[in-house]
Structure formats: structure tokens, C-alpha cells
Image 1 (cartoon, one colour):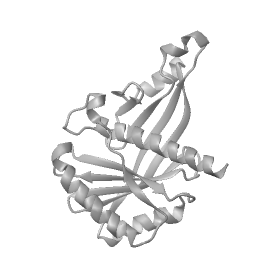
Image 2 (cartoon, rainbow, N blue to C red):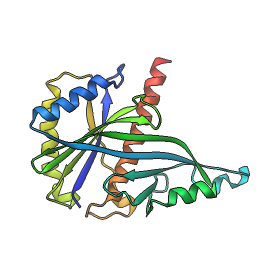
Image 3 (cartoon, rainbow, N blue to C red):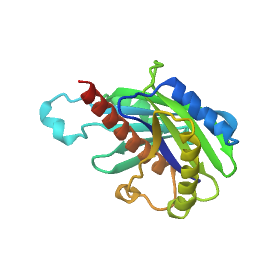
Image 4 (tube, rainbow, N blue to C red):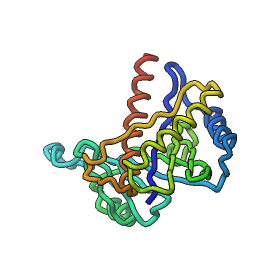
Length: 222
């Protein structure tokens, strides 16, 4: 499958994300001839264990992520970052987990927005919002390169495209920039050939970074 970079918006110190930034980013995609093709959506949930006895705490991961991706509607992905584990399951596993009551959802977030075609690239720009809420928590972008499925072979051309994109966006003088955090996929047992598991690991990585950014911003305000 095509390789994909998942990026998140890093606000400048003392600023926060807002809908105007999201609008400007979308307009920037269209200004470089991106053709809007429709909507896209991914969902990420934080799970924590339902411990009946505190003695069992060490037997379970403290928390992990569950991720559903639009391109794989029949699949569900679990990422345990601490143990560097990624698991692909059928989407029905969510119903099974609810019935077992071993874990409960602590936070669930939607990543949703619009998809654009730009030559051999597809760009998806979207907001991060809690389910059942419009409170903006972040901005993400998927940058997909269609001709190549090798992470290593595609790296230079996607990197060059990312630089062009950053230059176009910089002209709008927005209070922040997009950041690409590249996980070490081999730590999760993933090969060079790109899969949806690679995408799930990237989402887990940017969520960790977004949480860290929010916590540091809160510390500064306090």
C-alpha cells in the first residue's frame, strides 16, 4: 500500500490551536492546486484496565491505544507503546472488549477533515476533537505518496514535498508549524514495506507528542 506520513500541528510557545489555523491550512492545500475529494476520518481511543484487585496492576499494560482507520474499516489496531507492540484485529474486537469489561475507554478522539489530491500525493487535513464534542484538541495531516510502498525508497521524495509544503504554509505566518515524528518501525517488528500498522504506530506517536505539548503548555501557564 502507499506510504504515509502522519503530521501534527505544533503551536508556537504561548499559542494554541484554533479553527482559523485549520481553515488557513486547508486553503493553503487548495492554493497549491490540491483538489478536494471528500471527507476522511480516523478514531483513536485510550484504554485503561478495569482492575478489581490492585495486586493485578503489574499484569496489565497501564494504558494502550485502539485505532480505527478509514481505509481499513474491517480492522482495528492496538498499540502498546511501552512494550513496542502493535496488534491488528477484526473490528468486532471492540464489542468483545466491552462485554469482557477488562478495559474501559478513558478518552476517545476523532481525526476528521477533508482529503485532497495533488498529483501523486494525497493530503488529508483534519481536526482532533473528542467524540461527542467540538472542542478542538489539535490539527493533523496525512501526507500519502501513492506510487511507492517502501518507506526507505520514498523517504527522499516525500521529504522534499514536505519542505515545499512548509514553504507554502510559512507565507501565511501562522503561529506554529507541522512536525513529522518518525517512529522506529523496526522496534514494533514492522518491515520496510508499508502497511496500515505503520499508520497506527504513527498516530500513537503523534498523540504522545500532542499530550506532552499540552502538558508543557499547562505547566507554563501555571
